[in-house]
Image 1: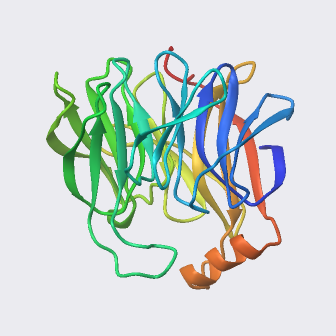
Image 2 (image 1 turned 180 degrees about the horizontal axis):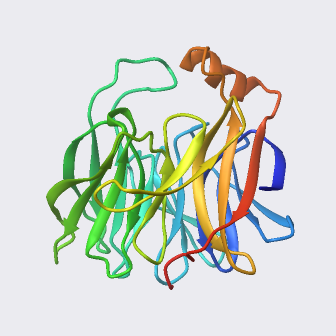
Image 3 (image 1 turned 180 degrees about the vertical axis):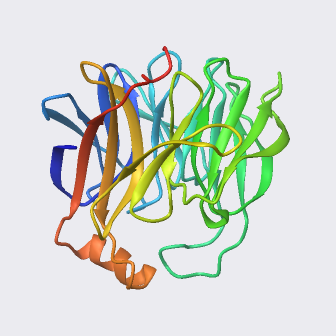
Length: 277
């Protein structure tokens, strides 16, 4: 395992885009693009949340961010608010349908959890809910054919799959895999998903729950997000920060906000590449 970047506050929301790894630098409120040798380019993100926001791209290449609102970044540098909808994660299909997830409680503030949702923003700007009763919705992936969406239900310890209907709706809810600890996940070209175990490790899991590979991470480091890239070959990027299992969630989050910065990104070669783009 090779160290790509360190001295990060809270790296999350990994994406493979334009031959670079992109991620959300929570707390610093930045979007960062990094190449295989660690060279970075940084963009300021006007998101009014320290944590709980993500990035993705429309088919035409315009960038989107979530958080307090759904924002689109225009070629001239201006920003358009597409929806006054707060959200955590995001994934976009080839038709320009935008899937958002979230839950209506303040996790970092210690509020009592309530089930979350998935909402669809269609290219005409309409917003509608397409799934509910998601137990702490987190990372999402779409299969390359656009016919299946998989979401991480972190509090349930499972990955849940849906069929994507022609109108963008979701149906045929089913368990993809369980007894995990998923957060920010990624899909490979064979349809397997890299996700977290809920402890100090990550696994590659097939539909139905078979564990195909496992990678351990150092003690007291949580792998919050995973990104599968092609850095001179298939490479898994593991985004971590210090997380002391003996401490409370509030204490761990407080330490991430106040510092010191413990966020890191490591890379490790793997056999299967990301899906073709």
